[in-house]
Length: 294
Image (cartoon, rainbow, N blue to C red):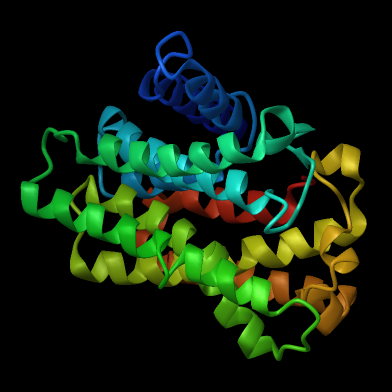
């Protein structure tokens, strides 16, 4: 199976699993459930579920078992987008080519959507996972909680908000994005591995890969924000520059940011060397992240 076919298959099964995990819009509170489904379904590349499934395949995890962590991490990601787009945060009106949640519904509903999606993520991941020991499943819950909270994604967003108008060093910018973007990406990789026969040494190698991929994703995002159009991105292009946010492009320049992306890509590939051909999907995803156009 080629990469494009595999990716499309994982995206479709993730969409179906998300649809099944979310409450139907016809049950009360129907407006909240409708907004939750609006914020999650029918858009996005599903990079985090793809990474979860690819990492799981390295250790022989069953695809059906990987659906729960893939859904959980995508629900956390969707909640973060609903909150990030609010006027009190990034104040954006476009996401995945359609009006943001607070524009389509209202600010209070968008806030509750994020709250409910976060809870739904942990409800999904706390359901019994056949073949995964209770101790390991508890580790998985702890991993996702840490990646989502003040020492992970939420903390990174706080640093991002405080950095508006500031001149950060590259190390400070990297620290911010290790938390804001990288923590959830890292959790997607490791959650997948935990569903298979992962060894401590294997988790260590995957952790190094995930750290590089998390930063790579953000560097490419900054490049696309500079080079791509709003129509291509499905969100407002040039928003970071307009808000005077520090990015890899405005600190390094566009050319050097591309050089950095190439170095991170190579580092990610190198981290996978011990796995041989079993990590082929992770290699392909590293290339996809660099070569994507939106």
